[in-house]
Amino acid sequence: MKIYTVGASVFATNTYLVVDDDTNKAVLIDPDGDGKQIAALLDREGYSLEAILLTHGHFDHIGAVDALVEMKKVPVYISEKDEELLRDGAKNASSVFFGGRGIVCQTKPRTVKDTDTLIFGGLRFVVMETPGHTRGSVCYFAGDAVFTGDTFFADGYGRTDLYGGSEQMILHSLRKLVTCMKGKRAYPGHGETADV
Ligand SMILES: [Zn+2]
Image (cartoon, rainbow, N blue to C red; front, side):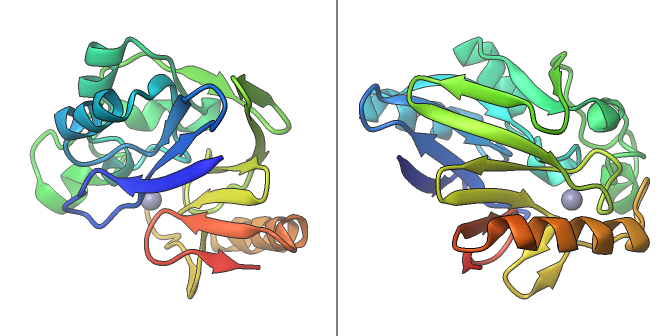
């Protein structure tokens, strides 16, 4: 399994491209930034995009979803509890910061819940619900990697003052998450990776 950071998000979001070495099947996690540029990279490398996984529904994690779905016709996965954030600029925090209607995503996603397993070629992602940053924040476990979104950062954890956020819930989630991440590498939604 190879993991790259792609997308050049203006919001400094880490968009991860995860590739199965044997099949060249690929998955994008939280695609923000330039969808065309990401699609061009996939084509150039001969990677077959199979799905888009979202750790949560905030505006800075979804900016390239619609463009990529249009070009690559792939399913998008998000927690049922965060689906409402995709089409609502107030709930996904974009209109809070920028005014107007904000950044929205029109794609109808598939929903995931705790312990669901998603398989694409040799890639296997297990879902862990980690509410607190948003109600529907999830982490994806894949081999020795854990994609933690804005729940866990190398130097802390995500804010809890936006729609659906809860300090008490994120602290509870972090206790469970950190225990399960022992010996693995965290790939957060912003900032550096961290060996836990
Ligand atoms: Zn967020």
